[in-house]
Image (cartoon, rainbow, N blue to C red; front, side, top):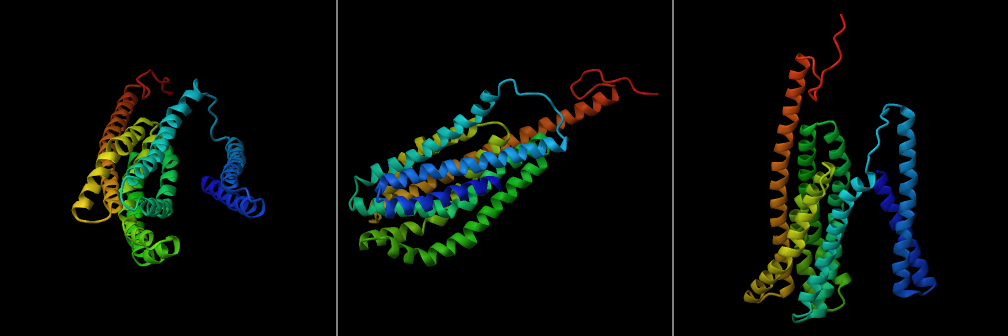
Length: 320
């Protein structure tokens, strides 16, 4: 909840300063960019205060009495932060590649405008899925600390089903019925409106295709493993973007359809393929982790019968 409110405060500050800098000070693009930066700092200040309050409350309970410190805290944080940062960088690279492909097509300006609308609507529609992924990381980390693999598997299943239900029963009818009106409102030319209408009809499919890709990455990070998310980002945004995009555009030309539609279908196929691979990877990893936990439990039970601790070391002498 604190993470969500930090984002909300960032956006509220951003919107307020956008209005001030743009319509009062007339700073143009600089004002929009500057308000975004200031809004992020506002969210950071809120997050730091909430984190400090949570830490003070944790210490006050006295439940966590461990005095052990991480011998390399910076390395532990960077082990997850660097792959995550590179992943977001690769996601941003896709927009650049898409714009580069569209500039070489007929109606390039209208296609780029329609893609911009499609991309923003997709991000807006995917926000509940993204919010679920944000919540999934601490959930998996906590349950992993408790070695409760059944809860992790159940949480992933529930998050996936809830995200799929949201896409099918809310996003799909909203875009199918409201997409044409949104396209007419945001499009400035008949060509842009026509392309935007077709592009928005693909948003539900794009949301469905991204669910495993969005949920598996934070789940792996909850297991303290940042590399799988980076590997799949490389596969999705570097390996698959250009081939799938070009193949989709070629198919659209063969069917005498706008290249934008083929490009978007190709990107959805790339996302779906990466999601399936990531999901299979997660399932295999979960089976391996469950087997490890079971073996450790068995070793602990056997050690207990022999007077050993779960690590195999001699335990305290039994009291009479």
